[in-house]
Amino acid sequence: MPPLASFFVKRLLGAIPVLGVVLVGSFLLLEAAPGDAVDSYVAGSGGLDASQLAQLRQAWGLDQGPMNRFIAYISALAHGDFGWSTAFQRPVLSVIFERLPVTLLLMGIATALAFFLGSLLGIIAGAKPGSLRDRFLSIGSLALYAVPGFWLGLVLIVIFAVDLRWLPIGGIETIASGKTGLARMADIATHLVLPVASLAMVYLALYLRLMRDRMSEIRRDPFVTGLKARGLSRRRIVWRHVARNAVLPVTTMLGWQAAVMLGGSVVVESVFAIPGFGRLAAEAVSRRDTPLLLGIILCSAITVIIANLLVDLAYGKLDPRVRVGR
Amino acid sequence: MMIWRRLNLEGRAGFVLLVVLVLMALLAPWIVPGDPLAITGEALLRPFTSDAHLLGTDRLGRDVLSELLYGTRTTLLVAFFSAAASLIIGSFVGTLAGFLGGIADAILMRITEAFQTVPGFLLALATISVTGPSVPTLIFAISIGNWTQAARVTRAEVLSLRERDFVAAARTLGMRPLEIAFREILPNAFGPAASLAAISVAAAILIEAALSFLGFGDPNRVTWGSMIAEGRTVLRTAPYLSIVPGLALVVTVLSVHLIGRGLSRNERLLQS
Image 1: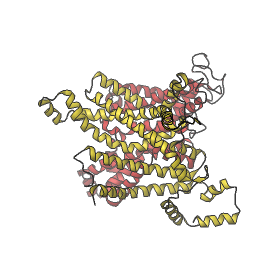
Image 2: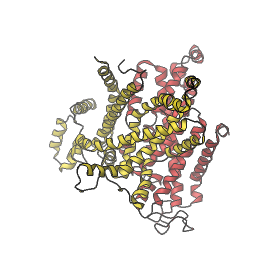
Image 3: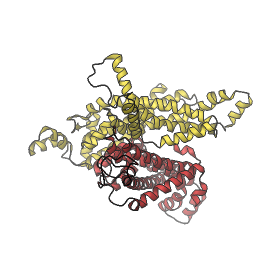
Image 4: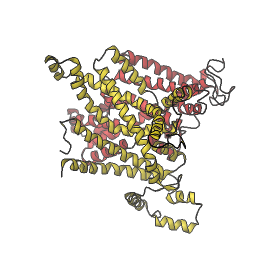
């Protein structure tokens, strides 16, 4: 097998036990929640008599013991059947797929922005540990890291949407604007500015701190002294050598950070009334739609696993010492 | 005052802030007597315009200052207990995994990884949706999404400790394996996990705030998150109702971070 393919196979096999634990956990939650799948299906369709209910339970394998119910749950999942959403009266998976793209877009832009700006500021701070700009940036990032994202969103709304009226207050695009093509994309972009900012700012602080700390650590490494002795300029040492080494371990954070950001998108999407995956989670809880909530949990676990896989691939590309597939 | 001496200037500032916050939480019934959820005045009084309501009143005419002080109680209560719970769960799992090794270790670490894969906030939401919101269930819901770091750190520490001489000595004394794990190794491995305490407390504060902002907090208590949500309905006319409790959150989390950073020079702990 070519190295890349075998790397993928190895990683996917490694993800199976983890996903298995998530499945068992979500099955237990489903069992703990009041009512079963038939109850949720019937809730929207008006009701059936007792014999029809029993028939449906038999057809879905719900009349059997927990072990068989678990097997029925797993085999349904394997067939792409994530269950029936009570709140939307549609299959769970179709609801999720409708909402996921917006959130991935939001998260993708926010992550990229937080990573690049955060690392950049981290390099600037870490280039001269203990300097005035380092202290300023460090304290600033610590304060920013203490800010709840949803509250930052509200503050940004007050400033930029209510007072200055520069940006829309919420939503993902102007409703019934009839815009198409580029005009529509520009419309969506203006709607994304504030939510992206409130998600990205908090994580920017995290990357700033990590990058700064790594920078000040690597600067003490003997190879930096060697470079100085060779007469390289300070700027060249900082950017070409120290920063390049420092950015690698910070990259590995990106994958796990996807989980944190998915969690953060729940509140931020609620603040900005964005019809995304995160707000769907809050809706699923407040409308007592357990099958939908479990579908969301499974999908976010899969998203995080994929994000980690992509980060590992990128890491292999960035660091010549690590060869993917070996 | 052992902690005080170990702290740098910024850490001491954080410590003083936190002490003030704890005092505010403890003394709330004496500073602002009466039920914080009672309607005590005209609705939507601006801050600093009335002597009876220093920080003004909310949409229903409740005193913002009393809500704010009682909110400190909920925030600190939930944060400290859930951070403690996640450290205990984490170090327990980590000790077992590191000490037992082999298949038990593999299983426990896959479970840890699974909990890391599911966003902690979603896990808390799902738990609350099954148990219903109250202070104990909130503590439980937040800690089950928050213990994985402590487990990893403790496991790494246990792996390096279990080959030491004092463990061999305990074995020769005839102590049973689990007794060795929890009476000899765990106390020695707890240090690194405890240095995660500040990060755990800060994370718990933010998760609790976000949960109660979405309306999944304890309905019988004032929380800063629910105050922000309540103020949001009048965001255009009275933005301070959302801004003030948010500032309280920022100050609290910042004080915890300052202490944590002042205590542990090992800043790489912030990473994992």
